[in-house]
Length: 526
Image 1: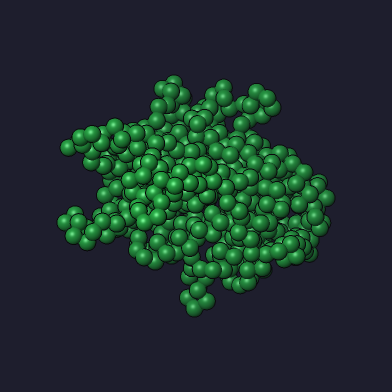
Image 2: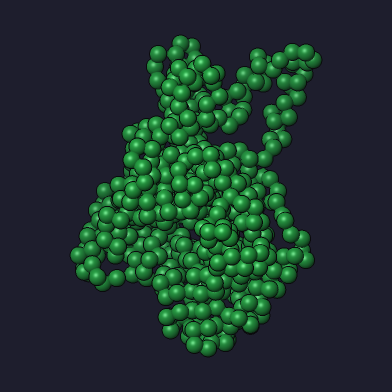
């Protein structure tokens, strides 16, 4: 019997085919291999607050901005920008008149925008009813079933870029998927950005660890896109990079984040302004208090971007988790952060900007039942609430300290299910299936009817890693649990990986830039 490749939302897998079924299996593969560059939801948003509650949180956020203020540390230019705009600047503390930040954002920030990929078919629209899934971000460690927990390397980074490229339920290559600690701190951004450009043709995130790193990202993107970098209709750069600008909660932006934000804003690249909050330590312990502080910090950051370059794309970000009041450790998959997510999603829609949050978050150290439960309890609110850009969709372990190979495969499977959920109920003639009901009638089964035969390949989501066979077959096949099956899958996918085509001249130009820049400064410069 031959083996044929069937590509599904989680990537390639192998199924057995033989005899007269080969044509049907080939047709199934062709249908399953179709992917979408992003999801456009067809189900309602889940809301947890009414108009009065949302208005109260908006009022409280404006009170924070007006009475308490936000610190913009170690950035004289940022303070001058605020002063010129009419804010009250005392030292590093900036107090904004009530409604000022909201007015600045609503006057010029786009409600949605396109982040262009080098493969135009992979470009994503961020905002509106769209959902974009990206992998996890920022872990210094990686973990797999064979080698356990260890420091991440550039090989691991490239592996995850490749796995993300092959995962059809992920739409975006992400950013610092893991931190390659085997490379110098001040130069590793070159290798990370290049890996996204070389090993994937999906959109990607830029470096934010220093304004110089942000500028290098912009320059490399110019080389990657060439003549397509400038929009001929506007004369401005296309948005080809999106970037994570974190507030240092509570109520502080530092020089590194502000410097990167200015570089990207001036180049018309998108900034995700995200307060990073562990409630109880970096915000109040209550949902409403955390939401008000999150909105205030995000409003200040987004308004600053608009002052730097009106019209530059911004995304309202929210990363809010709880902590154990006994140990102080962050906790994930609990109800309170889900409530914050629902509230912040509604506030972003009222403001008229895209929203970032969510993912497959967990505190578990390994890819176990805790990891699966907590990740599902984060990803489902993410999709029901209406998150537009989902960072940390796949791979997150140990509160973000580790990127897990098996966890990545498990999470990609969950993301594939969310595609089906967000597509809603098919109310077409085929979806109503009245012909099938008429054909079968009372007391018979639907397995052999024409409608079932026409739809059986794509009727239900089929996970490539869960086992629904008999106990005897499962035992015969090695009695493997889900983690073991995920381990086999990521290895198989890397073995089958083929890089997307990249023009040789473009590749050479990018590498030349990288090599010249790497040799232009000593390891201690930044």
